[in-house]
Image (cartoon, rainbow, N blue to C red):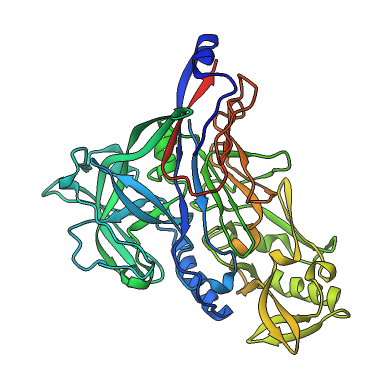
Length: 489
């Protein structure tokens, strides 16, 4: 990684009064090999297991994750899509943890877990956290304020014998984990300027798993733990932002081509075209106010109340879901409208219960745009963002509706099929989510102080402005970089 400043660090320090803000960068990788195709029913089963988790309801600086892998949902056969590497403890030890926007807690497998997976089919070596081997690790007592905040997504257990704050998760798909909370160092590198790197860390609370069940025990899916990106107090983003280490916002940009990739950033990506929609308040997930759907500019006859948030209803943005899901009241008119718009150019067909079309030309020339209209902003989908390519039949390409039908009164979930090729910003401080179409192979600008200072995700460079210290960070697999950024007074 290269860094260059148009103005030197010395000249900036001489000219302005500064304070220090941290910027953390970590790599994000695909958690499985892209070697086989699976069918829609397998994808739905995978998503159902995830939805059982996220719908259970039990419970500064900039971090950049380079995303690797394919966005093709028919190459997906595992429970989680991506993992990243984090360094914990003293001396630091590296762990591969799955990214999950549907949960809050970072947890890794404890060395004392006897029934946890010992090997992984994902081509990675499993590591185990040993608090006794870390000079900076401390077990969290029941009296610690962090223990009392573990209410949103965890079942907190306090033992009167050892005064130790423990947890137990039981997910809706039958899997589960339990263990103890540990306070220890999360390590990264600090970049002060060109060729000037220093080690740094921040103390966080995370889970040390001593028991796992269900899918968590399977070697074909095994990694070292789960990295929750939810809104709860114990999520890493909440912990770091509460201390001013990072802003309370994260963003991602997932490439939609066959090679996959992209970036995930703890920070606000800046792009002129980003439109924001407010989050539904007091929800554990990223619920939005979806109001209507239009096909080819024509509003569909859907009662807006079917998208409203209440009990197990609502509209959720979830980057861990592969496909997209519409409640029946919206799905039926949606599919009917798509078919009516294209039937004179294609051959409609049903494949394994899915509405498909045999297409002899480019889908972008035939299929209409779809607009998802939210409070304050609309999301325009190209055909490739609601259709999936499912091979060939009779010499024609078969494209199927990627949106799946869910029962009446269910939850509408927008997964990777919709989110790809877009910048997405989860602004927890302002309680809003924003998006814009974008080529995710390009660098992105990231604000780290509410629009005053900026970081470009990618290879490092800087603008000519002494007020806007700009870094260019392309999604190329940079590992564990923490950047001091100057906050100008």
